[in-house]
Length: 229
Image 1 (spheres, one colour):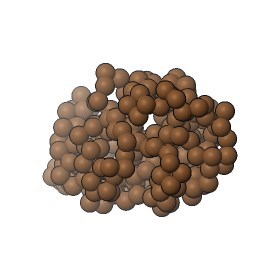
Image 2 (cartoon, rainbow, N blue to C red):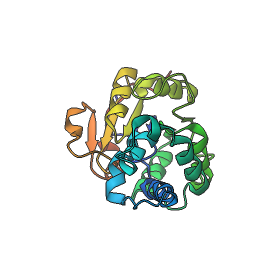
Image 3 (cartoon, one colour):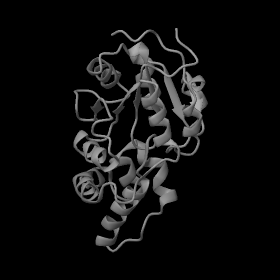
Image 4 (cartoon, rainbow, N blue to C red):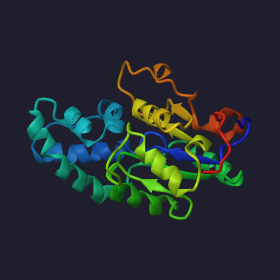
């Protein structure tokens, strides 16, 4: 086991872990609400649902709508979001320095998200990540998505690194479940999006971090196995 140094590879969730995308989604939801003559949703209302995906956010925006009717709004939601993606979102404070620290240590990093891959790929050039992000797996890239371990397993394979030599970082319990099933050490982060009452201390992550700045230091990362795949 290695400890006290950066992992050979780190895989990240995107929304709520690297990117504070909630402002984009608030604008998206409010454009839909305005088009229907309805009142706006606030950032505070929508933020806890962001990591759960479009359907969860639409449930917050349209709470009195029947499930089937609300689910039919997903294509509209994604179309509006695609048109404005990244205009209001920002990296969480400290994330860029964390990524630079990993790169300076020779670590590889990539993204495994449940966001559709085509949307996640639109983010990369906005942040200058096309060459820096070694692998990107979206929620529709494979036959399974998190909490299934397959996306993490395939991401590790694509960067030629054993799953046990990678660390997965995420803000949702599904992230930790997927990592554990893949045999990948995990970090649960507290700066992302969580519904009230959701307790990360029960997720069984290998480490819990309150701020990205903690991950600037190699000692904050969980131990991993050797890097050979």
